[in-house]
Length: 618
Image (cartoon, rainbow, N blue to C red; front, side, top):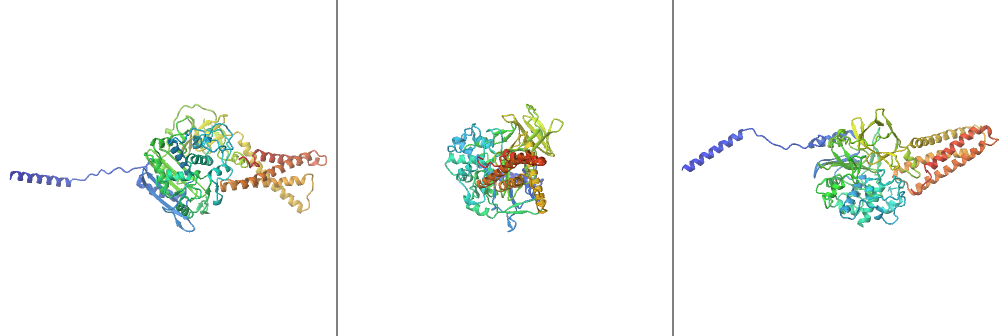
């Protein structure tokens, strides 16, 4: 009895205690919500992107923001066919553009860890004999040069893509048909190169013994479950993607006015490792997440993935990487790596912070990007975090600079002289380029301040002492002749305009029957017509090149031979006028012949200097 009584008392006391506890206020300990390095809560990201999207001009786009293996937010906006009112959705495919190149660098590192590819060996050891024909230097070109885009190649003159599916060439043949000249020593100039990247993809073919598209499907897409991405030029390696791509139309957005429909713009990229991948947002997100995964699912060892994303080229003499084995680092509140891309139809971005696993992918059927999303996700760069090493080079960097990513030889050489970048002293020890102020930070760095935007350039010199600025995926190099070259092209255009006026005057005189004959009149008139034709050929060549990302061999022959004929006419007209200057019969018209001689001699010199006739060997 006593034991039972004690048990009842104990239970009663326990019940009272539980009632007292139940009456007390409950305190919860919920996990703190995650935020991005830019200070935005994960739960707010979707609304923030919505707000940014409303300010942009897009027919449609899709995006996904991820953190590790979790998709934080993903959405599709707009229409992939505005005329047919077809909305973008999870089955929409967009073209990756140059993000495709990252599959080359991943493939290369897979072969590297297998011991089948030496990043520092001469690439000619992996290529068929005598594959390269336009090399200027005997120094070896390494695979690392191709990764860093500093093998020395300029832009290709001839087609790297076609709108005719039946004209697609095998990768090796397409590379040889469009081989650009090597104009810089390997390692000296960074000049982003589609051709150099595609050559690296072909080396993957040569080593693996598989078509590049097959290698990527087997070793990248399949391990990551990417069933809705194609990479072959015609997209037929994944028929579902080809079917979906045919529904997509491209659009342009001028500064003023409505969207401009461009049609399907389905280009078949013959140098396809450099830009042909096409797929869904979900697949691109899976790819980016795989690259962020610390378990390195695409490699045998996580150390190989770490090496892939380590610096392989650097700004100035600093430790800031300018390239990470083909991936481009960007410096925000945190350091990200990634790549963007653009094709005739689409634009794309893939960026991630490997430390936190936070990143995003974005694609659209047009041209553009989501302004402010990088700052929102990754924060803004604090200029105070830039390394401020010793100023080891105080050489004056003011002057005129050229960009290397252009055709540096042959009939389109003149285009490279139309982009003139002046860097001026600001009077206080710094420099200005456009509206941006440049300040030396040491370690070969220049801080760039343009309003609220902060960035940096690297400084360096070529082997011949020419100053160079590192802008990331492309350098700018000093060119003291650039003002004269630019001016000569402007004068050439002016002379063509003057020729139009003079021909109109001649026509009016002929109609009024007041036209007087003089020695060499026919040749001078023909030269005036040739100046107009030459300028028209220059404009036409640039237009065809821009629309098709290259010229056909037939285009090149037509433009080159036609310009050669114009140059010959200028030369003959100059000789004719020179002879007439000393003719006793034409003594009174000597000043007229002098001007004709100077204009035609100048025109002939421009054709020769800018190689506008040279359609071979480029």
